[in-house]
Length: 475
Image 1 (cartoon, rainbow, N blue to C red):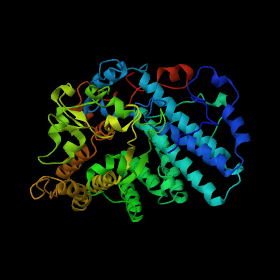
Image 2: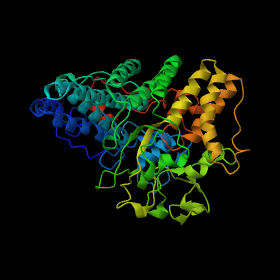
Image 3: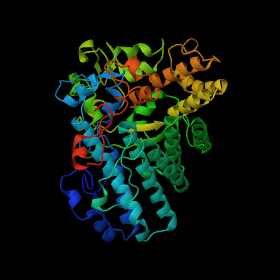
Image 4: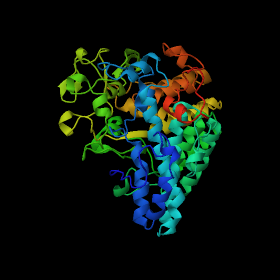
Protein backbone atom coordinates (compact mmCIF):
# COMPACT_ATOMS: atom_id res chain seq x y z
CA UNK A 1 0.00 0.00 0.00
CA UNK A 2 1.42 3.37 -0.96
CA UNK A 3 1.68 6.15 1.59
CA UNK A 4 -1.80 7.33 2.55
CA UNK A 5 -2.10 11.04 1.76
CA UNK A 6 -4.17 12.74 4.42
CA UNK A 7 -5.89 15.44 2.40
CA UNK A 8 -9.15 15.24 4.28
CA UNK A 9 -8.40 13.89 7.71
CA UNK A 10 -6.41 15.83 10.28
CA UNK A 11 -4.60 13.73 12.87
CA UNK A 12 -6.91 13.26 15.83
CA UNK A 13 -9.77 15.14 14.08
CA UNK A 14 -12.91 14.86 16.24
CA UNK A 15 -11.42 12.80 19.03
CA UNK A 16 -8.18 13.61 20.77
CA UNK A 17 -7.20 17.24 20.65
CA UNK A 18 -8.32 19.72 23.27
CA UNK A 19 -10.30 22.51 21.62
CA UNK A 20 -11.06 20.87 18.29
CA UNK A 21 -14.45 19.77 19.58
CA UNK A 22 -15.41 23.43 19.75
CA UNK A 23 -14.62 24.15 16.09
CA UNK A 24 -16.54 23.72 12.85
CA UNK A 25 -16.44 20.17 11.40
CA UNK A 26 -13.36 20.79 9.24
CA UNK A 27 -13.44 17.34 7.61
CA UNK A 28 -16.96 17.87 6.32
CA UNK A 29 -16.13 21.26 4.83
CA UNK A 30 -12.92 20.06 3.16
CA UNK A 31 -14.50 16.89 1.82
CA UNK A 32 -17.36 18.83 0.25
CA UNK A 33 -14.96 20.65 -2.03
CA UNK A 34 -12.65 17.71 -2.58
CA UNK A 35 -14.80 14.83 -3.87
CA UNK A 36 -15.08 15.59 -7.59
CA UNK A 37 -13.44 12.73 -9.45
CA UNK A 38 -12.68 9.04 -9.15
CA UNK A 39 -9.07 9.96 -8.40
CA UNK A 40 -10.26 12.09 -5.46
CA UNK A 41 -12.26 9.17 -4.08
CA UNK A 42 -9.35 6.77 -4.45
CA UNK A 43 -7.05 9.22 -2.68
CA UNK A 44 -9.57 9.51 0.13
CA UNK A 45 -9.96 5.76 0.61
CA UNK A 46 -6.17 5.38 0.48
CA UNK A 47 -6.03 7.62 3.55
CA UNK A 48 -8.35 5.23 5.39
CA UNK A 49 -5.69 2.50 5.16
CA UNK A 50 -2.98 4.61 6.79
CA UNK A 51 -3.92 4.00 10.46
CA UNK A 52 -3.58 0.23 9.96
CA UNK A 53 0.19 0.25 9.79
CA UNK A 54 2.56 -0.67 12.60
CA UNK A 55 4.83 2.27 11.98
CA UNK A 56 6.38 5.07 13.99
CA UNK A 57 3.84 7.56 12.70
CA UNK A 58 0.88 5.60 14.09
CA UNK A 59 2.72 4.45 17.22
CA UNK A 60 0.30 1.53 17.31
CA UNK A 61 0.94 -0.76 20.29
CA UNK A 62 -1.86 -3.23 19.62
CA UNK A 63 0.93 -5.80 19.44
CA UNK A 64 1.71 -5.20 23.11
CA UNK A 65 -1.92 -5.62 24.20
CA UNK A 66 -2.03 -9.03 22.54
CA UNK A 67 1.49 -10.32 23.18
CA UNK A 68 3.11 -8.73 26.24
CA UNK A 69 0.00 -9.27 28.37
CA UNK A 70 -0.22 -12.92 27.29
CA UNK A 71 1.88 -15.99 28.05
CA UNK A 72 3.85 -15.54 24.79
CA UNK A 73 6.36 -12.89 25.82
CA UNK A 74 7.72 -10.64 28.52
CA UNK A 75 8.56 -6.99 28.02
CA UNK A 76 12.33 -7.26 27.84
CA UNK A 77 14.05 -4.16 26.52
CA UNK A 78 15.66 -1.59 28.75
CA UNK A 79 12.59 -0.41 30.67
CA UNK A 80 12.45 2.86 28.73
CA UNK A 81 8.85 2.26 27.71
CA UNK A 82 6.99 2.15 31.05
CA UNK A 83 3.64 1.37 29.47
CA UNK A 84 4.97 -1.95 28.19
CA UNK A 85 6.35 -2.83 31.61
CA UNK A 86 2.93 -2.04 33.10
CA UNK A 87 1.19 -4.32 30.61
CA UNK A 88 3.50 -7.18 31.48
CA UNK A 89 2.64 -6.79 35.18
CA UNK A 90 -1.03 -5.78 34.73
CA UNK A 91 -0.34 -2.51 36.52
CA UNK A 92 -1.38 -0.23 33.65
CA UNK A 93 -3.82 2.63 34.27
CA UNK A 94 -6.08 4.91 32.19
CA UNK A 95 -3.10 7.24 31.85
CA UNK A 96 -0.87 4.64 30.19
CA UNK A 97 0.05 6.36 26.94
CA UNK A 98 -0.27 3.35 24.64
CA UNK A 99 -4.06 3.23 25.17
CA UNK A 100 -4.40 6.87 24.24
CA UNK A 101 -2.48 6.53 20.97
CA UNK A 102 -4.37 3.35 20.06
CA UNK A 103 -7.73 5.04 20.61
CA UNK A 104 -6.71 8.01 18.48
CA UNK A 105 -5.31 6.10 15.54
CA UNK A 106 -8.34 3.82 15.23
CA UNK A 107 -10.84 6.67 15.44
CA UNK A 108 -8.80 8.49 12.82
CA UNK A 109 -9.36 5.50 10.58
CA UNK A 110 -13.08 5.40 11.39
CA UNK A 111 -13.49 9.10 10.72
CA UNK A 112 -11.77 8.82 7.37
CA UNK A 113 -14.05 5.92 6.41
CA UNK A 114 -17.09 8.02 7.37
CA UNK A 115 -15.74 10.92 5.30
CA UNK A 116 -15.54 8.62 2.28
CA UNK A 117 -19.00 7.15 2.82
CA UNK A 118 -20.57 10.58 3.31
CA UNK A 119 -19.12 12.07 0.14
CA UNK A 120 -18.67 9.20 -2.29
CA UNK A 121 -21.83 9.97 -4.24
CA UNK A 122 -20.46 13.42 -5.16
CA UNK A 123 -17.59 12.06 -7.22
CA UNK A 124 -17.97 11.23 -10.90
CA UNK A 125 -17.13 7.58 -11.52
CA UNK A 126 -18.70 4.33 -12.62
CA UNK A 127 -21.19 2.76 -10.25
CA UNK A 128 -19.03 -0.35 -10.04
CA UNK A 129 -16.03 1.66 -8.85
CA UNK A 130 -18.18 3.63 -6.42
CA UNK A 131 -19.48 0.41 -4.89
CA UNK A 132 -16.00 -1.06 -4.65
CA UNK A 133 -14.71 1.98 -2.73
CA UNK A 134 -17.82 1.87 -0.55
CA UNK A 135 -17.06 -1.76 0.25
CA UNK A 136 -13.50 -0.84 1.24
CA UNK A 137 -14.72 1.92 3.55
CA UNK A 138 -17.32 -0.33 5.19
CA UNK A 139 -14.80 -3.09 5.74
CA UNK A 140 -12.09 -0.81 7.10
CA UNK A 141 -14.50 0.89 9.48
CA UNK A 142 -15.58 -2.55 10.69
CA UNK A 143 -12.00 -3.62 11.22
CA UNK A 144 -11.19 -0.52 13.28
CA UNK A 145 -14.30 -1.04 15.38
CA UNK A 146 -13.47 -4.70 15.90
CA UNK A 147 -10.05 -3.74 17.28
CA UNK A 148 -11.52 -1.06 19.54
CA UNK A 149 -14.18 -3.39 20.94
CA UNK A 150 -11.62 -6.14 21.39
CA UNK A 151 -9.38 -3.85 23.43
CA UNK A 152 -11.85 -1.61 25.28
CA UNK A 153 -15.24 -3.36 25.09
CA UNK A 154 -18.00 -0.76 24.80
CA UNK A 155 -16.92 2.24 22.71
CA UNK A 156 -18.74 5.15 21.03
CA UNK A 157 -20.17 4.10 17.67
CA UNK A 158 -20.27 6.62 14.83
CA UNK A 159 -21.50 5.53 11.42
CA UNK A 160 -21.66 9.02 9.93
CA UNK A 161 -20.01 12.39 10.30
CA UNK A 162 -21.53 14.39 13.14
CA UNK A 163 -21.27 17.95 14.36
CA UNK A 164 -18.76 18.67 17.13
CA UNK A 165 -21.49 19.20 19.73
CA UNK A 166 -22.78 15.67 19.03
CA UNK A 167 -19.49 13.90 19.60
CA UNK A 168 -19.58 13.79 23.37
CA UNK A 169 -21.69 10.67 23.65
CA UNK A 170 -21.81 7.66 25.91
CA UNK A 171 -20.30 4.31 25.00
CA UNK A 172 -22.24 1.99 22.74
CA UNK A 173 -22.76 -1.58 23.95
CA UNK A 174 -20.34 -4.07 22.43
CA UNK A 175 -23.23 -6.14 21.12
CA UNK A 176 -24.47 -3.15 19.12
CA UNK A 177 -20.98 -2.41 17.78
CA UNK A 178 -20.56 -6.02 16.70
CA UNK A 179 -23.99 -6.02 15.08
CA UNK A 180 -22.86 -3.03 13.03
CA UNK A 181 -19.73 -4.93 12.05
CA UNK A 182 -21.85 -7.85 10.83
CA UNK A 183 -24.04 -5.52 8.79
CA UNK A 184 -21.15 -3.60 7.28
CA UNK A 185 -19.16 -6.73 6.45
CA UNK A 186 -22.15 -8.35 4.77
CA UNK A 187 -22.65 -5.27 2.62
CA UNK A 188 -18.95 -4.91 1.91
CA UNK A 189 -18.76 -8.53 0.77
CA UNK A 190 -21.34 -7.77 -1.91
CA UNK A 191 -19.30 -4.89 -3.31
CA UNK A 192 -15.72 -6.13 -2.95
CA UNK A 193 -13.90 -8.31 -5.51
CA UNK A 194 -12.79 -11.82 -4.59
CA UNK A 195 -9.20 -11.06 -5.58
CA UNK A 196 -7.00 -8.12 -6.51
CA UNK A 197 -4.49 -7.57 -9.32
CA UNK A 198 -0.86 -7.06 -8.35
CA UNK A 199 -1.17 -3.26 -8.37
CA UNK A 200 -4.00 -3.40 -5.81
CA UNK A 201 -2.60 -5.93 -3.35
CA UNK A 202 -3.43 -4.92 0.20
CA UNK A 203 -6.86 -3.52 -0.60
CA UNK A 204 -9.85 -5.15 1.05
CA UNK A 205 -11.48 -8.13 -0.64
CA UNK A 206 -14.69 -10.12 -0.33
CA UNK A 207 -12.79 -12.80 1.58
CA UNK A 208 -11.51 -10.28 4.12
CA UNK A 209 -15.07 -9.07 4.78
CA UNK A 210 -16.39 -12.61 5.20
CA UNK A 211 -13.47 -13.47 7.47
CA UNK A 212 -14.00 -10.47 9.74
CA UNK A 213 -17.69 -11.37 10.03
CA UNK A 214 -16.67 -14.92 10.98
CA UNK A 215 -14.19 -13.70 13.58
CA UNK A 216 -16.78 -11.37 15.06
CA UNK A 217 -19.23 -14.26 15.32
CA UNK A 218 -16.57 -16.38 17.03
CA UNK A 219 -16.13 -13.73 19.71
CA UNK A 220 -19.90 -13.73 20.23
CA UNK A 221 -20.00 -17.54 20.35
CA UNK A 222 -22.40 -17.53 17.41
CA UNK A 223 -20.95 -20.74 16.05
CA UNK A 224 -23.47 -21.42 13.31
CA UNK A 225 -22.68 -18.01 11.85
CA UNK A 226 -18.96 -18.80 12.04
CA UNK A 227 -19.54 -21.92 9.96
CA UNK A 228 -21.74 -20.01 7.52
CA UNK A 229 -19.13 -17.29 6.93
CA UNK A 230 -16.11 -19.59 6.77
CA UNK A 231 -18.06 -21.73 4.33
CA UNK A 232 -18.74 -18.71 2.12
CA UNK A 233 -15.07 -17.77 2.26
CA UNK A 234 -13.95 -21.27 1.30
CA UNK A 235 -16.46 -21.32 -1.57
CA UNK A 236 -14.60 -18.41 -3.18
CA UNK A 237 -11.85 -20.91 -4.06
CA UNK A 238 -9.24 -18.21 -3.55
CA UNK A 239 -7.43 -19.40 -0.41
CA UNK A 240 -5.33 -22.39 0.55
CA UNK A 241 -2.40 -23.17 2.82
CA UNK A 242 1.09 -22.49 1.55
CA UNK A 243 3.17 -25.66 1.44
CA UNK A 244 5.91 -23.91 3.40
CA UNK A 245 4.77 -22.33 6.68
CA UNK A 246 7.65 -19.83 6.46
CA UNK A 247 6.30 -18.30 3.28
CA UNK A 248 3.74 -16.42 5.37
CA UNK A 249 6.50 -14.38 6.97
CA UNK A 250 8.98 -13.68 4.17
CA UNK A 251 9.18 -10.56 2.04
CA UNK A 252 9.44 -12.52 -1.21
CA UNK A 253 6.26 -14.55 -0.60
CA UNK A 254 3.89 -11.97 0.88
CA UNK A 255 0.28 -11.55 -0.25
CA UNK A 256 0.11 -15.24 -1.05
CA UNK A 257 -2.88 -17.60 -1.30
CA UNK A 258 -2.96 -18.07 2.48
CA UNK A 259 -3.27 -14.34 3.14
CA UNK A 260 -6.87 -13.25 3.72
CA UNK A 261 -6.22 -9.80 5.19
CA UNK A 262 -2.67 -8.46 5.03
CA UNK A 263 -1.58 -5.01 6.18
CA UNK A 264 1.09 -3.66 3.87
CA UNK A 265 4.41 -2.13 4.88
CA UNK A 266 7.30 -0.86 2.81
CA UNK A 267 10.91 0.15 3.31
CA UNK A 268 10.85 2.67 0.46
CA UNK A 269 10.41 5.73 2.67
CA UNK A 270 11.12 6.44 6.33
CA UNK A 271 8.01 5.94 8.42
CA UNK A 272 6.20 3.47 6.15
CA UNK A 273 7.87 0.32 7.41
CA UNK A 274 6.89 -2.19 10.05
CA UNK A 275 8.35 -0.98 13.34
CA UNK A 276 8.00 -4.44 14.89
CA UNK A 277 11.27 -5.15 13.12
CA UNK A 278 12.99 -2.89 15.64
CA UNK A 279 10.77 -3.35 18.68
CA UNK A 280 11.05 -7.15 18.65
CA UNK A 281 14.58 -7.66 17.36
CA UNK A 282 17.19 -8.53 20.00
CA UNK A 283 19.32 -5.67 21.26
CA UNK A 284 22.29 -7.65 19.98
CA UNK A 285 21.12 -6.82 16.44
CA UNK A 286 20.20 -3.13 16.80
CA UNK A 287 16.70 -3.87 18.06
CA UNK A 288 14.94 -2.89 21.28
CA UNK A 289 14.20 -6.43 22.46
CA UNK A 290 10.78 -5.45 23.81
CA UNK A 291 9.19 -8.85 23.23
CA UNK A 292 11.16 -11.80 24.58
CA UNK A 293 9.57 -15.19 24.10
CA UNK A 294 8.55 -17.04 27.24
CA UNK A 295 9.81 -20.53 27.95
CA UNK A 296 6.19 -21.63 28.44
CA UNK A 297 5.55 -20.96 24.77
CA UNK A 298 8.65 -22.85 23.69
CA UNK A 299 7.53 -25.86 25.73
CA UNK A 300 4.07 -25.76 24.17
CA UNK A 301 5.44 -27.02 20.85
CA UNK A 302 5.30 -30.77 20.33
CA UNK A 303 8.50 -32.67 19.60
CA UNK A 304 9.67 -32.07 16.04
CA UNK A 305 7.10 -29.35 15.35
CA UNK A 306 8.95 -27.21 12.77
CA UNK A 307 6.87 -24.15 13.60
CA UNK A 308 8.90 -23.56 16.74
CA UNK A 309 12.14 -22.84 14.88
CA UNK A 310 10.24 -20.73 12.34
CA UNK A 311 8.69 -18.68 15.18
CA UNK A 312 11.25 -18.53 18.00
CA UNK A 313 15.05 -18.37 17.95
CA UNK A 314 17.07 -20.19 20.57
CA UNK A 315 20.69 -20.99 21.40
CA UNK A 316 23.02 -21.80 18.49
CA UNK A 317 20.35 -21.35 15.81
CA UNK A 318 20.55 -18.96 12.87
CA UNK A 319 19.19 -15.52 13.69
CA UNK A 320 19.17 -13.27 10.65
CA UNK A 321 22.72 -14.04 9.64
CA UNK A 322 24.26 -14.48 13.10
CA UNK A 323 24.29 -17.33 15.60
CA UNK A 324 21.73 -16.79 18.34
CA UNK A 325 23.02 -17.08 21.90
CA UNK A 326 21.23 -17.26 25.24
CA UNK A 327 22.49 -13.78 26.06
CA UNK A 328 20.38 -12.31 23.24
CA UNK A 329 17.34 -12.34 25.53
CA UNK A 330 16.72 -12.49 29.27
CA UNK A 331 14.45 -15.49 28.63
CA UNK A 332 16.96 -17.08 26.18
CA UNK A 333 14.37 -16.91 23.37
CA UNK A 334 13.36 -14.27 20.80
CA UNK A 335 10.57 -14.04 18.21
CA UNK A 336 11.35 -14.37 14.50
CA UNK A 337 8.08 -13.55 12.73
CA UNK A 338 7.84 -10.13 11.03
CA UNK A 339 11.59 -9.58 11.46
CA UNK A 340 14.29 -9.53 8.82
CA UNK A 341 18.03 -9.28 8.40
CA UNK A 342 19.21 -5.72 9.21
CA UNK A 343 21.06 -5.68 5.89
CA UNK A 344 17.71 -5.81 4.04
CA UNK A 345 16.34 -2.54 5.42
CA UNK A 346 17.58 1.05 5.40
CA UNK A 347 16.26 1.72 8.92
CA UNK A 348 15.61 -0.89 11.66
CA UNK A 349 12.15 0.61 12.32
CA UNK A 350 11.16 0.38 8.66
CA UNK A 351 10.91 -3.32 7.97
CA UNK A 352 8.96 -4.37 4.90
CA UNK A 353 7.49 -7.60 6.19
CA UNK A 354 3.71 -7.17 6.15
CA UNK A 355 1.46 -8.04 9.06
CA UNK A 356 -1.08 -10.70 8.06
CA UNK A 357 -4.02 -10.02 10.33
CA UNK A 358 -5.99 -13.04 9.04
CA UNK A 359 -4.45 -16.15 7.52
CA UNK A 360 -6.41 -19.00 5.97
CA UNK A 361 -4.91 -21.31 8.60
CA UNK A 362 -6.70 -19.26 11.24
CA UNK A 363 -9.95 -19.45 9.28
CA UNK A 364 -9.66 -23.25 9.36
CA UNK A 365 -9.12 -23.15 13.11
CA UNK A 366 -12.17 -20.91 13.56
CA UNK A 367 -14.17 -23.49 11.65
CA UNK A 368 -12.78 -26.31 13.77
CA UNK A 369 -13.57 -24.45 16.99
CA UNK A 370 -17.12 -23.64 15.95
CA UNK A 371 -17.86 -27.19 14.79
CA UNK A 372 -16.53 -28.61 18.02
CA UNK A 373 -18.51 -26.23 20.23
CA UNK A 374 -21.63 -27.35 18.35
CA UNK A 375 -20.82 -30.96 19.21
CA UNK A 376 -19.70 -31.85 15.69
CA UNK A 377 -16.38 -33.23 16.89
CA UNK A 378 -15.58 -35.52 13.98
CA UNK A 379 -16.15 -32.66 11.53
CA UNK A 380 -13.96 -30.35 13.62
CA UNK A 381 -11.06 -32.76 13.19
CA UNK A 382 -11.00 -32.15 9.42
CA UNK A 383 -9.90 -28.47 9.33
CA UNK A 384 -7.70 -29.07 12.37
CA UNK A 385 -5.91 -31.85 10.54
CA UNK A 386 -5.44 -29.64 7.48
CA UNK A 387 -3.44 -27.19 9.58
CA UNK A 388 -1.47 -29.89 11.44
CA UNK A 389 -0.63 -31.82 8.29
CA UNK A 390 1.11 -28.82 6.75
CA UNK A 391 3.35 -28.57 9.80
CA UNK A 392 3.83 -32.35 9.89
CA UNK A 393 5.05 -32.37 6.30
CA UNK A 394 7.81 -29.92 7.23
CA UNK A 395 8.94 -31.87 10.29
CA UNK A 396 12.22 -33.70 10.46
CA UNK A 397 10.36 -37.02 10.61
CA UNK A 398 6.81 -36.64 9.25
CA UNK A 399 5.97 -40.26 10.07
CA UNK A 400 6.15 -39.61 13.82
CA UNK A 401 5.66 -35.84 14.24
CA UNK A 402 2.35 -34.22 15.10
CA UNK A 403 0.04 -37.26 15.14
CA UNK A 404 -3.53 -36.84 13.92
CA UNK A 405 -6.10 -35.83 16.53
CA UNK A 406 -8.71 -38.59 16.57
CA UNK A 407 -10.60 -37.94 19.78
CA UNK A 408 -14.40 -37.88 19.80
CA UNK A 409 -14.55 -36.04 23.14
CA UNK A 410 -15.55 -32.37 22.96
CA UNK A 411 -13.30 -31.29 25.84
CA UNK A 412 -10.27 -33.09 24.41
CA UNK A 413 -10.88 -31.66 20.95
CA UNK A 414 -11.32 -28.19 22.45
CA UNK A 415 -7.92 -28.51 24.13
CA UNK A 416 -6.35 -29.70 20.88
CA UNK A 417 -7.77 -26.80 18.87
CA UNK A 418 -6.66 -24.27 21.46
CA UNK A 419 -3.19 -25.78 21.49
CA UNK A 420 -3.06 -25.60 17.71
CA UNK A 421 -3.95 -21.90 17.77
CA UNK A 422 -1.20 -21.27 20.29
CA UNK A 423 1.58 -22.83 18.22
CA UNK A 424 0.29 -22.04 14.71
CA UNK A 425 -0.42 -18.37 15.42
CA UNK A 426 2.22 -17.48 18.01
CA UNK A 427 3.37 -13.84 17.79
CA UNK A 428 0.59 -13.05 15.30
CA UNK A 429 -1.22 -10.84 17.85
CA UNK A 430 -4.05 -13.13 18.93
CA UNK A 431 -3.05 -14.88 22.13
CA UNK A 432 -4.24 -12.55 24.94
CA UNK A 433 -7.61 -12.05 23.30
CA UNK A 434 -7.98 -15.80 22.85
CA UNK A 435 -7.32 -16.40 26.54
CA UNK A 436 -9.90 -13.76 27.46
CA UNK A 437 -12.66 -15.03 25.17
CA UNK A 438 -12.04 -18.59 26.40
CA UNK A 439 -12.35 -17.39 30.00
CA UNK A 440 -9.00 -18.84 31.08
CA UNK A 441 -6.76 -15.74 31.20
CA UNK A 442 -6.91 -15.66 34.99
CA UNK A 443 -5.68 -19.26 35.16
CA UNK A 444 -2.57 -18.62 33.10
CA UNK A 445 -1.55 -15.00 33.57
CA UNK A 446 -0.08 -13.85 36.92
CA UNK A 447 -1.54 -10.50 37.94
CA UNK A 448 -4.67 -10.85 35.83
CA UNK A 449 -7.77 -9.81 37.82
CA UNK A 450 -11.06 -11.35 36.77
CA UNK A 451 -13.83 -8.90 35.84
CA UNK A 452 -11.24 -6.16 35.30
CA UNK A 453 -8.45 -7.12 32.95
CA UNK A 454 -10.69 -8.62 30.28
CA UNK A 455 -10.83 -5.06 28.95
CA UNK A 456 -8.21 -2.35 28.97
CA UNK A 457 -9.02 1.07 30.46
CA UNK A 458 -10.37 3.88 28.36
CA UNK A 459 -7.74 6.63 27.97
CA UNK A 460 -8.06 9.22 30.70
CA UNK A 461 -7.67 12.00 28.14
CA UNK A 462 -10.89 10.84 26.46
CA UNK A 463 -12.72 10.66 29.80
CA UNK A 464 -11.59 14.21 30.54
CA UNK A 465 -12.82 15.44 27.16
CA UNK A 466 -16.15 13.63 27.29
CA UNK A 467 -18.08 13.52 30.57
CA UNK A 468 -20.48 10.98 29.07
CA UNK A 469 -17.77 8.33 28.80
CA UNK A 470 -17.74 5.94 31.76
CA UNK A 471 -14.54 4.15 32.63
CA UNK A 472 -14.41 0.36 32.41
CA UNK A 473 -14.95 -1.51 35.72
CA UNK A 474 -11.96 -1.78 38.02
CA UNK A 475 -10.11 1.28 36.73
